[in-house]
Length: 506
Image: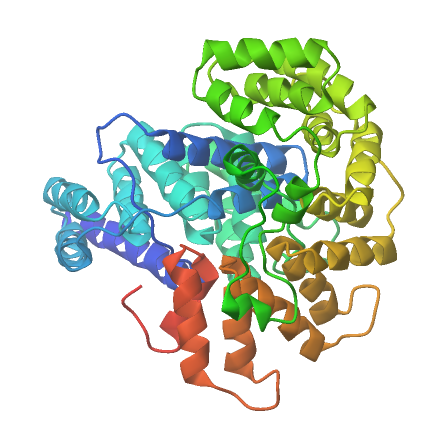
């Protein structure tokens, strides 16, 4: 390759690195080594990346946001050898700029093997594969990066370039739109997209994708772009699955102990499910449910006998076993049949489970009014997750008319029974003055309660409050401490904040 070509490639790569820094996106995970079969967790993350693209394609901002949240709330494995990985990353960058492309790719692969959780290395590697013309490998690597860090705007922009270079203009447009949505500097990102739209040398698919993205982001002349505002958090599949695990593990009538730190918090942080479970009838179903979920045919037959006899809790247990494939093959249609029987009998867990499937179109066509009604019935019986999801449906106008006051009231009720997500959402309303005056003192109290319970998004918000002095005085040390807690759970904005405060080893 000529020196001029090498210089152009290095310059282009430097621009991408500058964009990545300007957008301030970074976030750690560990997964299977390169070449290994994807584990379930990674497969789930990659599926949500596809859902983010699909949401962008259908102009559904809520779907994009919800898929991002699903990824961020999956558990994070431990980091690899950070120092070795970063040394290899540095040498790989130097070799790439010197036009030693093959050697650079080899070092990037070693770096990723040393620490698969380092999304910056993953993104760099994907970009170098792209510049080397390895488009299919680059797309896979960038999707992997986004499975690690779903709000990394620079990686979305890089993926858009790769998709455009493959002649997939509509999908490139989708990726550009998501990049702009999560950009820390939307004006810079707009200029980046406009560069491709005006290009006479880039691939046609990339140019067309950029043009389509701009027409969607700025449909009228003179419109200006803004970064995507935060939203309250809808319930996630991980949260719903945790509720199932809690039910299976619950001893009949037992309530979880409340930690001392929780007793001092302004919102109850006891297991939000414990009180509800302790009040449910037919506790003898619990051990049968747990055994059937582990594959016991005898327990499953006994559950079916009770279910056919009209036992609503057993009907819900059978539904959950088939809905989640616990000891049997997944059968969503059969699960919904049993959910309906149990829900019609008034069993609160079945009402919430059926509502989830109706909302998301699992085993049936999505039916938001029915989902709203079943969430409402479960919420009125004290189901904390149903309270949160009902509040979200009021907020978004899903299955009902938008009602900000009703939404806030249900988020508060969810917080009061100990749901960290509910406390976060109530705080969000108070922070941004949604439907009521801004009240940072109350917002901080709700955020702190959820943060104390280990909720990563609230840990970040508490760090933010200390950094900017919501209480009238700033506390950098406390801010760093809370940002670290959130960063260790993989929350990307927390890692950005630590970098801003001079803490780089995250």
